[in-house]
View 1: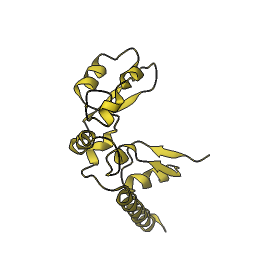
View 2: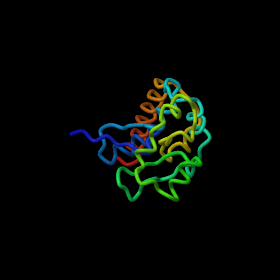
View 3: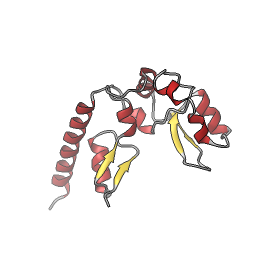
View 4: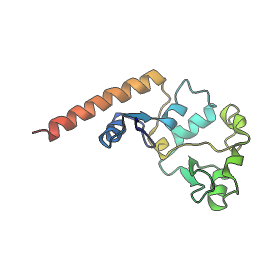
Length: 147
């Protein structure tokens, strides 16, 4: 069964790190949300571009349901301090977030890696740059650590 690494993957170096740990593929969630072709509203993309590594919150850490990381907004800051009984119910107005750009309408899922994303690029460019940097990284490490 293939292992796909997710979380913190945004470039070839982080892809190489995931492969070194045994992954056979990577998922770049936040990076692809910010891609040119992503249908999410520009407000969400801009929030990712403006984010620092500390601009996210970890929600629902004690359940029930899944733990989530999201961009810090008034809503998510409140949820961090006073968790709702059912975090999944807070996705009720996702369309207003995704397509209307209302950053308080739902939870804008995003990883800490948002702090490393500084531009909106086409998916092809993201993938091409990631793969090229991955190959450069593993080649450099191979030379450095081979006998």
